[in-house]
Length: 322
Image (cartoon, rainbow, N blue to C red; front, side, top):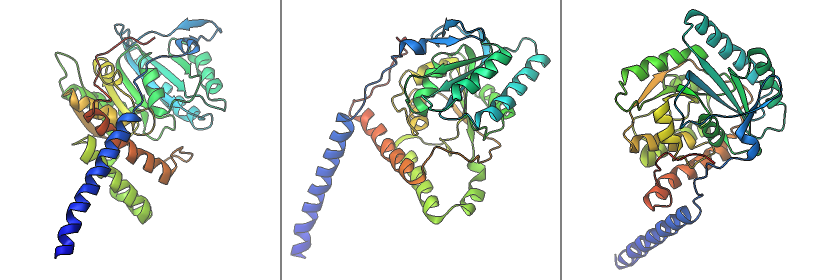
């Protein structure tokens, strides 16, 4: 009993020391928010080969919808997705002539012909409808989405993955959900596509280890960052322009866990969020490495909360990009 009494204070002291070390690590390794862009990233190339400057998210909207597609080495998977998206958008515009749109493909420092593949669609539809933002170096999916969003013209802004795993017409479900949130007067609202309804089926196909990692990730998301959202990672999210500006202006994480920080920021600002079941099919060729990517995301989740707690990161008022 005496031995136990000596051990407990030692364990408490050790736990306190570990917590202090983790807090210091989170604070000292926190990267600063940077919306700087390389000179080459300020322009897009038209179908005729001319350079024109990208607009800013701070400007008033001039299109009904912007679609931002982050793409890293997606020369093989992206054409199918782009064909489906453009067919839907063109048909919708024919049915409703007042509907206007743009697609922004963000090449995240690819080493293949992602930019060239996307530019073929620019040649087909024109740069007013499809623009390519080629990043000088790889930033990560979150960094690519932010760069594309900050260059968009839409009243609504859709984030969509280049693999086409989510059927593009499901955007209409997100639009209905966004309207149901009644985002007036500040026009702040986000609708998130969700695969939570497919979880039982997917778990049955996964190994026990991958299921353990998935449930562990969900717990960390719930415990540290975001409550009330079952699937934070679905790459199909619709923002009002005002909500996009508010959230992306504070976004720090540029890798896989950026969705979580984005929704954490939204909840901190009390921006209403809807979660909508969407059609989803797993497409081969994912860049996610199961164990190491989940490990990195788990670390990022813990550090997201701790960095806001320690003041290393702060919620920002929207600022202009340089």
